[in-house]
Amino acid sequence: MSKKLLMVPQDPFSPSPAPHLGFLILASVIKDDGYDIKIFGGSYIKDIRSKLIKSFRWADIICFSSKSPIAEKVIEATKIARDTNPEAPIITGGWWASTSPEDVLRHTPSDIVVTGCGEDRFRKILNLVSQGILNDERTKYNELSKIPGIGFKMNGDVVLTDPSSPIDPNDFPDPDWNLVDLNEFSDYKEHKFVRLHTSRGCPFNCNFCAVKHMLGKRYLQYKPERIINQIETLLKRYPDIISIKFHDETFTANKKYIKELCKKIREKGFHNILGFTCMTRIDTINEEIINELKKTNFRSVGFGIESGSDRILMELRKGFKVRDIRKGIEICIDRTIIPETEFLILLYLILVTPKTEMIDVLKTIRLCVWAMFKAVQANYKLNRKVYDIMILCNPQLSIFKNSDLWDKYKKYYIFPNKNLPLEVQNPLLTHKNPFLSAYLRLIQQSPFEADYFLVMVVMLRDYIRMHPEEFNTPKHKKIINDILNLCSNVLKYDKFDTFSSQYAAKITNSLGN
Image (spheres, one colour):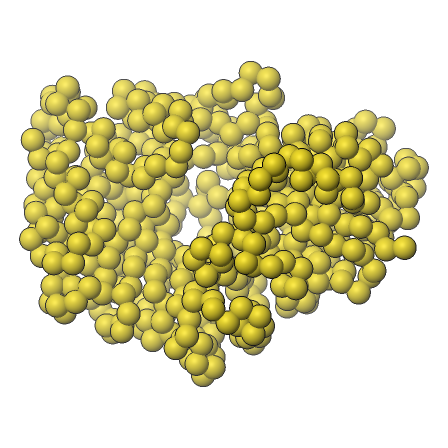
């Protein structure tokens, strides 16, 4: 009789999760091993808790993915699973398990944690668990201690094995899309887009990022043919797909690869029926790469620029400066071919770090408005809407245990839940500056996701009125004048009601008095 295997995504209580690519790949690895596999999820699930409990009762083995910002939810879900089905082994992987495996074992009833990508170990772990090795402490230790990159408990103590090596994704099969119906997920149901990965890992060294813990620093890419095959498979099953989102951390890190992939997409004619989007670093692009993306019908490119202040970029160990950001935006708008369709540039920010000062906030606003001006100016010359800027951001610098910043910055954060140990909480940043402190309190208490950039801009108006002396220095005055002049030009040149002009109007209203 086949074993019933349940896979539960990172946020088990989310009413509208995205399909979990990692689970779909793991399912492909074991699809011929006789397991009856179910991936929990769907769009706008009602009575999530009751449906989780029903799924837990069904399962013989339960696998969780985890994420440190929602560790509390993972703890709750794994405890419900254990209470509902005490006999079912629990295996937990994902980002939290990779950054803090000992905490997952201490604070959840997980029997085994798996760090990093687990395709190379998943089959062996499942086979051992199916054989009942968890029922005998000596057998459990003898077998599990041979597997790298996992953790388990032995007589109440946590045992962590040696780290595993980076996994070449080409050694394992593509995601098994037959295991999910995309029509049940909001990404596809509402927007007709699908996420794909072309790579794993990141060769860069930002100090706030968990990628190196989960995926490693070694940058590994799927062969372009594998990506083409996945797109073909998806189009056959879902012919009304309109967009593919390449969800890599640094899509353009390997320029030769991107040129080859774009060429193959165009040879297949996919660019005539699909739009594409990606996220990457702004210092990994050049004219040739952006031209390739535009010719291949990439509709948007996102850049994690984080800040418009060189001092903050250095704090975050980004490895580039504001001049590099400006150069990248000029490449996207002024120095490459004009695309046939609209081309949206997404700027991802981290608005507040422990070292952020008001001058850094103003510099960030200035850089963003400068980018908006470049976009609307280009549209004005073309007499059609091609370019636009959208600002997306985290309101605060988040830190996780075992990150490069944990010991250095923990003193700047509060841990709001008195009933949970510090290491399983998502710490909230405090700040000595009264404006930034008030901004963070508002965001942290907000029950909904706001446009964090605009919230800060709107709050600035009252703060400047109350503390004009703080902004009367020559350097503050110059930056504010720069911002207002740029906003004036955005509004002057925009004829198409862009996001850029909407931002500019609100910024003018806040800083223009």
